[in-house]
Length: 234
Image 1 (cartoon, rainbow, N blue to C red):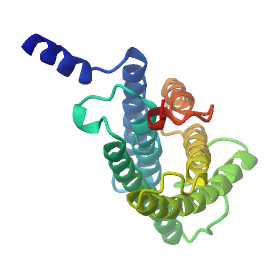
Image 2 (cartoon, rainbow, N blue to C red; image 1 turned 180 degrees about the vertical axis):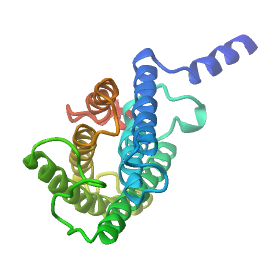
Image 3 (cartoon, rainbow, N blue to C red; image 1 turned 30 degrees about the horizontal axis):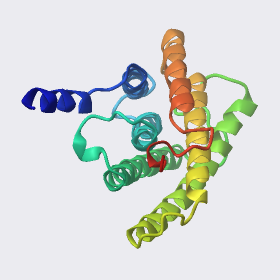
């Protein structure tokens, strides 16, 4: 019996190969996204704008991605997390932390604009603006960024309402929260990837590595087929 219990404990702590690779990709992309602006000669820790890609990268590539992971993977380590209520709590914590970093990233670009006397909702130029890419891609990054921020705030409000409804036993409340979450996640990761290719804080090989990792997260993060992952009743 002791051997069986030990075996079950080992299985509970194991991650499948696909899950492990996805986790490594998340860690790789978030690390490189944070490393680039901090070490770039046009960035660095003393540059306010540095914290815009720094916070946005960690928020979308790691925290919000892990938030999706709570429901989409069966073999997360530890018995404590193998329940709907536990996963929902961890999901809420990760998404809340991600939201805080997104707001911090927006505040960084807002402060940088004020310091430089630049206008919001317009394409910025170096030293803190984009250094590469055609004008329309830069403008697209700005528009998608503001749209994603607005939708993320709506999503957070829906999440709070849904969490309260679930506490009252209503499992079917606010079904659009799941759909909107996928939209925000897709827009956010896509915009992070666009920013990587518009700012020369990363070399071409690192841009390719980051893009591959982010695409992997997009493919394996949300369940695009509409299934509910860990929340299935099967």
